[in-house]
Image (cartoon, rainbow, N blue to C red; front, side, top):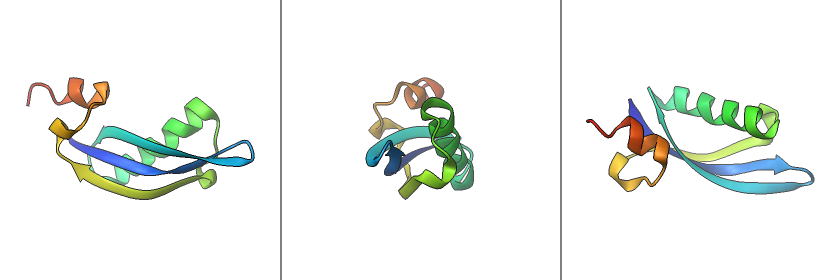
Length: 75
């Protein structure tokens, strides 16, 4: 598993809301899927309204996200 950082915007009402998310995924395609499904479940945003501008692999020590820290703690 690798750590990724996704940046972009999603539709919140009539406005676009910027976001930055750190997550753990198998590869870039899996990371993209996890971002889209996260916004769908938490914010009820359809996938077509989530715009991912950048998705890059990061060093897990650069992240402050509890998900990344907990998952990659033992490695």
